[in-house]
Amino acid sequence: IMEERKITEAESIEIITSMISRTKERLEKGYGDILLMWGYLTVAVTALIWVLLVTTNNPAVNWLWFLIGLIGGISSPIMAKRKRMETGAMSYTDRLTSNMWSVVGFTAIASAILCLGFLFIGKDSWSMMFAFALIIVPMAEIMQGLVIKENSLIAGGSIGLLIGLFIMCCISAHVPLMVTWFMPLFIMAFAAMMIVPGHILNSKAKRES
Image (cartoon, rainbow, N blue to C red):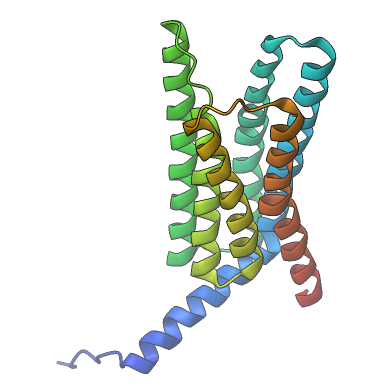
């Protein structure tokens, strides 16, 4: 009977490093497009709502925020599946990051349902969605950047998180989120979190292809 060979510490580090490197390569090849889709979608919808609120002053325009979740929620899995077919089988690190973003997605759905529930009883809690968009999303992005050692995700997520913390302080201090300054900050956050890292990842993928 052959004895089981124990993996040395050096081999363990090599395996982990290889998994991280492979996941990073896969993200560079496919994740940039998904980031750009979410980034440009969010910026476009935010800019549309901004213009409509200024020109019409109709609060019903805020229902357009659901376009982000609807369009992005349909497009993202399709794009991710296509990229998986191109890059091959998923590693453990791939599954880890995929599951992390799945949790973020389920949190978004649960948050929206709860806000609708409160609206049904006459209570407006929609500002809580900004906590999701500018706290939970950037934290997930920072964690992913730390796992795969991608500085653009860490930096972009950090900028988004700082803006989110500022917005949360304003909400806690009952400072009104005025369209004139909140919308530009929201756009800036998603440009830093999604658009800039997306272009950087795509640029790296092109250089390595």
